[in-house]
Amino acid sequence: MSTPLSPLNPPRRLLFGPGPTMVDPRVYQAMTKTVVSHLDPYFFEVVEDCRRLLRVAFGTANEFTLAMSGTGSAGMQTAVANFVEPGSTFVVLAAGFFADRMSEMGRRQGANVIRIEKPWGEAFDQNEVAAKIRELKPNVVGFVQAETSTGVFQNSEILCAAAHEVGALTMSDCVTSLGAMPVELDKQGIDIGYSCTQKGMSCPPGLAPVTVSPRAMEWLKARKTTPADWYLDLKLLADYYEGAHRYHHTAPISLFYALREGLSVINDEGIENRWLRHKLSHEMFVAGVEAMGLRMHVKAGNRIWNLNTPVIPEGVDDLKVRKRLLAATDIEISGGFGPLAGKVFRVGIMGPLATEDNTLLLLKGMQDALAGEGFAVKGDAVAAAQAAVTWPVAQLV
Ligand SMILES: Cc1ncc(COP(=O)(O)O)c(C=O)c1O
Picture 1: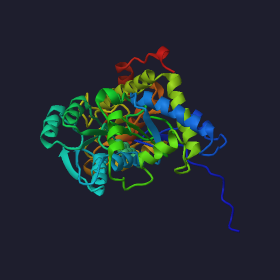
Picture 2: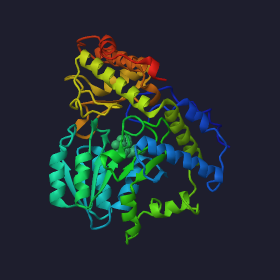
Picture 3: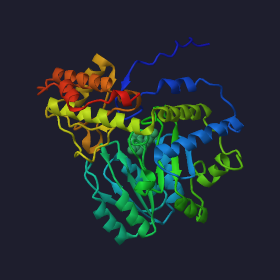
Picture 4: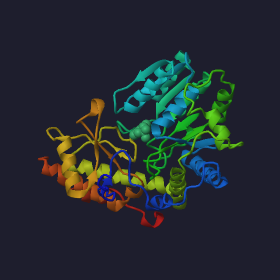
């Protein structure tokens, strides 16, 4: 027998990165509940609760809403494998790491991928994209609503309307927006949306919520070819999660308990209150970093509330700042990657961390770490953040 392992003892971290983010304490509790079988009627009750509350978070009336086993990338793969047929034309709005991943998945499905590109950090002009869509007449248009690699939020009502005009389906990555910002799937005209559980939902990673419009379901029912990915085949999964409850795979029961509790936390708070909490934290954060003398990489109006990308000042070492911050405060933030490596911090303020006190704690920590690495801090971040935003305590949990 080898030496017994010591008890698990993960380090204390305040996860202010892009994800995973802090898990809600109620979610941890839910995960300790007894596992039932994946065919137990109780499990399907849990699934139904998740489906009902996911519709609220997505802002959709879509009947076909469920959680795939797997992380956010499994959601992306589900969308692409089911709705992007080999030989079809797949237009991808590419201005970040996760849009690149979507293009690559399309390429692997054998689609003719046409990328419309922008520099990382810019949002697409919807009218320009709409004109391109009318010209290209693709089968599917894919884009990332909240691009975690850049901090850009992409609105889509106009471009999705153009896609529908030419008979195309629309697909959006809502991995970072779900549970933290209004996704407004139906209003935005998105046919297929997917997400994850480890960001705005305050759960551990492991499930990928997916929702499909009636229009896209019609298309899928009529699809003649079989998706190459058996595991993510939505027609097979419909047979398991809906109607017949025929075995497909052994669903990760404890993760469904977690998701149900995460959604229940959101429901108790009220989704609008939750969005407001994220918006106010974001506004405080921006006021604070700008007071320090940093600037935001993304233009105001195009920013994700729960994922901020301040530009790293000239001459300051990204990694050293982050290490100093972690050592002094247990706060973890992230760096940029691809063309933004060493150029921006990626700072997530989500779920239980999106409060006035936590945002101020973060700002103080970042200010001290930057000063410690030789940056001449211009003004006090905490005072500026407090002056900029009045927190309506009474409205919020
Ligand atoms: C926008 C976006 N899409 C997709 C993913 C992939 O999700 P996962 O890492 O959970 O597979 C991420 C992960 O951070 C993301 O931020």
